[in-house]
Image (cartoon, rainbow, N blue to C red):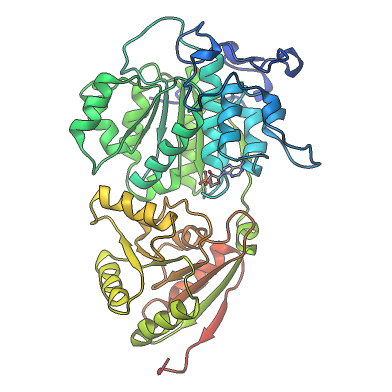
Length: 456
Ligand code: AMP
């Protein structure tokens, strides 16, 4: 069991923990002029820098190739003294300055401290934990060869979409080193994943709880040497009933004193607070997304409509919006199917993202939506939760979510990265009673417009 010891109070938590990690970052000025300062390219020590994946085919990269002006109040990735291989990947991804969550958490996590982070998708939290994990693995390479199914880093996410997007970002961030990323998610070929575990190094494992537990119980993947554990969207794991599985998984990892743990959640209901305390060791807490700040970028409106008005109003809304990228959330799968059929018949370029759509199709749909090939996505909460797509102009709640926290997650798909977004929610007599609860959670009252014109 975790957390059998009594934790000291917060005043006592200033001492460095995990001696092997304290002061582990090199001094910035100790970097050699060519900028190649990290000790190793990959999992095994003493590989030359040139041993990094040479997919760019260029000569040795130097930090001088990554020019970003110093700007007051902004943290550059250069300022964090990251291994050059990580910096190179960051520059290739086009990032220049840290997002707020990155600037706040990296100085903590790069020292090896545990973290409890309050942040939603869209804040750059994925790169925040991945950069910390990858930098740590490069700074502390394995000193001896070990079985390739022993995971070094483990990231648990509630949905397949989210896990796959994390894995995608991890692949990009490890493009210049030999750390290998493996994703174990349900709904995709078990055999293929099994084969991957047999043939590839599991440096960074990204997984959904059910499939991971299955593999771990059959000893196809071993979690006993996990150095860094990330629990992403912990509140969602709770609401989806995954906590028992997550507990079993965590029991297979080293004790919390011996691993680094980062837990992220958009919200912190009591149960999550308790689990966060239980799973982390002297954690530092960072909260960078006060809900009010998120909502400021979103023009929110509730249309009070009769049930039969919803479809004509929605159709007009989409037509008036031209080709803008839109997500429509419905509460049930049959509603999404119904809506999808209506949209299709109205010649609106759309696709469906719900649990009943096969996983490979969902991945393709998400890509089409990202690439702008699909304009309108009809989604359920579970499937829509992990969508990391920029420039979504409009979120429509075809029905109000039963859980007010879902409202925050849904509208958080728009208004990202400082852009303005719009959310329109339909409330009919069946669900209008949910409005006060939603307003409580968003911390403000939401403009309501009464739709009188049924001929819309
Ligand atoms: P996330 O909150 O992890 O879903 O990230 C949202 C989006 O922001 C993703 O598309 C990331 O690739 C992107 N992103 C993350 N960090 C940065 C950064 N420092 N600068 C620019 N984009 C970023």
